[in-house]
Amino acid sequence: MSIELQALFGVVVILLVLLSVQGGLVPATHGLKWGLGPRDEPRDPSVLQGRMARIIANHLEGMALFVPLVLIAHLIGLSTPLTQWGAILFVGGRVAFSVVYFLGIPVLRSAMWGVATTGTLMVGFELVRVGF
Image (cartoon, helix red, strand yellow):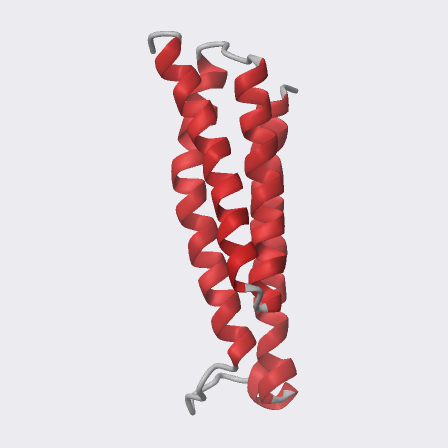
């Protein structure tokens, strides 16, 4: 399996972990009875629940750009050092972004978003360069 497809699998695993953490925060912050119940009575999300929701939304937005580019590269048989490093940067940046954002570290959060976005741009640039 190519590095790019491994990265694609990695971003899906990251999403699964993020969703699991989000699901665990509900009973942890609002109590097991409410968290596992029908939640008919709404409650305001905690700070961490809000962060996790924003992390997941941002991750999905990043995936919406990264996934098609990796799939296109795979379908045309394109795997170069630029696409490989782009994929690695995307996954590493997404992991770091998620952790740093969850911990509430503002400037480093934006830098890690930039790392991940740079990875996406690298894959896209290589597709353009080869004339896709």
